[in-house]
Image (tube, rainbow, N blue to C red):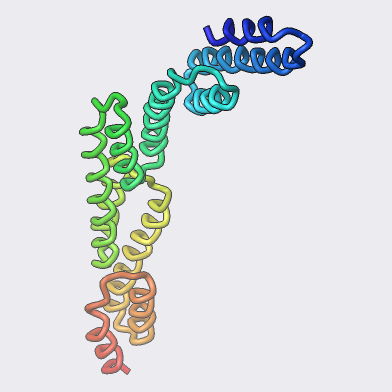
Length: 214
């Protein structure tokens, strides 16, 4: 209807009025804008729909469909962001995306499960922090397993595994040094325990033992 009215305006004004070329261009732009909307909706791309809505408004076409289309684009974008957030493995990103899905009116049937996942990811990283502070290799390894199982971003896990392995070697090194009865070996083993991040509560006593041996 908008296109037909535009062409009718061109015919009614007459060539002598000098407005025909301008109105024809306007009608053509409206036609392109409305065609772009149909193409954008068919593409299923939120960004394309939003760009088409912008052009509809700029062209002077009938904008009655625009609010509905923008809301559709928002729902689509919300689901895209939710998918990206889940792939990121970041609890905060998942929770923000869940909020936007609910606010946008998109299908939120998966949101409860994803909120549980976000909470599990938070707990997993809290367990990692606690395990690292404890300096216990077994605790760090268990926490790493939970990070991976929770769906969290596990990019830091290899480094944490290496730390756990170093702690395990350091503890074994202390045991071997004490059995050797060598003060130098005990002191070196104590230094490695401290450097590895292992639980160093036994170090003062062992250093005292090394001094006595000397």
